[in-house]
Amino acid sequence: MDLNEMMQVLYRGDAARVAELTRQALDSGMAPQDVLEQGLIGGMDRVGKDFKDGTLFVPEVLLAARAMKAGMELLRPALAKSGVAPRGTLVIGTVKGDLHDIGKNLVGMMVEGAGYAVVDLGVDVAPERFVQAAKEHNAGVVGLSALLTTTMANMKAVIDALGAAGLRDKVKVMIGGAPVTQRFADDIGADAFAANASLAVEAARTFFG
Ligand code: B1M
Image (tube, rainbow, N blue to C red):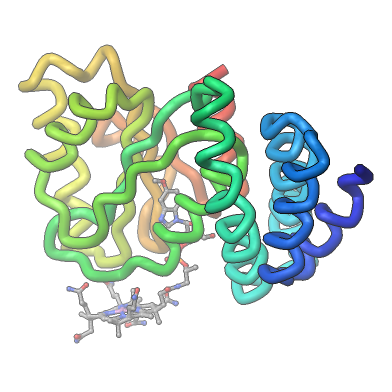
């Protein structure tokens, strides 16, 4: 089966057609990993590039990510059965006191689209919950989002809590959100700052190898 059409409909955000093509590909006996890598991830890669270049915008990316999710729902059980383990796990959340989640969701969906497992803790997440989830899911990366200048400080609290739990050398910390800068990331000792979801995927790829 030709996976080009899957990449194109995913790019257009047509969730129903992505689900249909995923089902057809699996029914035709195609390996789930090929459907994932050449179809779904291939499509999301194009979305990521065009978002980075400024030819796609947030609403289109959200639609494409939703289409990716529709394919993933069908693929996940097949991948689990075929013993394909995710290439790494990102635990992500919006820090304590902050309820903004649009950017965080976009980052989570794009990183999942790149083939990694994503554990989304939601919004208003206390440092201890990040620590607990990083342990529980053996996370390689903890991702923190903040949209308020008043909650940015809580990113440092998570880094400190990871250190106190003895996890700081085991997990990388990536941060982002509109008020966050590279300088702030350096100041609080984060491993990466990403200005948008495409750059977050690039950072995840670097960390996970
Ligand atoms: Co709020 N809000 N808001 N808000 N809100 C801002 C952030 C604000 C800049 C608006 C303004 O005044 N101009 C301002 C903050 C000012 C400041 O701190 N200096 C503000 C304020 C003040 C507030 C309230 C305090 C308002 C009030 O109640 N008085 C309140 C706070 C509530 C709380 O959190 N405790 C509040 C509430 C809300 C809503 C609930 C109404 C709503 C949130 C809905 C939701 O998220 N479900 C909301 C919204 C929508 C916004 C704006 C308008 C848009 C944010 C957004 O979603 N952008 C925002 C103004 C603005 O930013 N222009 C604003 C789109 C999103 C795709 O971008 O989140 O930046 P962004 O994510 C990007 C990158 O930053 C990056 O990748 C994403 C995709 O490219 N990124 C990461 C984000 N997280 C990342 C993590 C990474 C890596 C990259 O690694 C892990």
